[in-house]
Amino acid sequence: FHTPDNDRLAIPGFRMVDGPRGVRAGDATAFPVGMARGATWDVELENKVGAAMGRETLAKGGNVLLAPTINILRHPGWGRAQETYGEDVHHLGAMGVAFITGAQEFVIASAKHFAANSIEDTRFSVDVSVDERTLREIYLPHFRRAVQDAHVGSVMSAYNLVGGHYCAENAHLLGDILKGEWQFSGFVESDWFLGT
Image 1 (cartoon, one colour):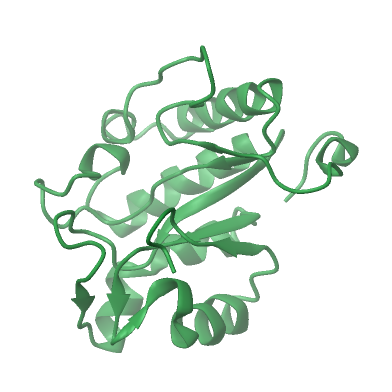
Image 2 (tube, rainbow, N blue to C red):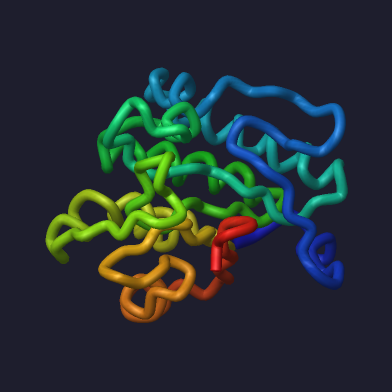
């Protein structure tokens, strides 16, 4: 990641601020949800939204913005459906890269929720059974673009399990793919409360 002034990020520890719809720290701008922004297909506008949220995060004393949500929308009843851009992996990648690039002019962005997170009611216990091809063609391409194209500084792991292992402790997702194949050099944080 880069910022106009990297010294601003040299503060001990990280101050993480949610979220995908705007900075959740006191009075702040409420932006349209990701689904509405995704419906515009306007990557230039999304870059400006990312920059505005990044600037506001920094102004609020944060240095990590917990956004964007780039999970693929598999079911409209998913509780986080409104946070993501849609159901097309190319579109998710393009919008996510635009947001991250804008936000990281000021702070560290955190692409979330890695990976295969698309259900709400059982998100703490569901074990997603997915073959490797589907994982790589449907659930991971947009995260790969966040890492390789936008150089996202942080990735948030999902609550769910994939292949019998929780995402925050999943050696295949985090070690083999994210850190290994994609050469991700940033940090991974778990989702809150029941994330590990």
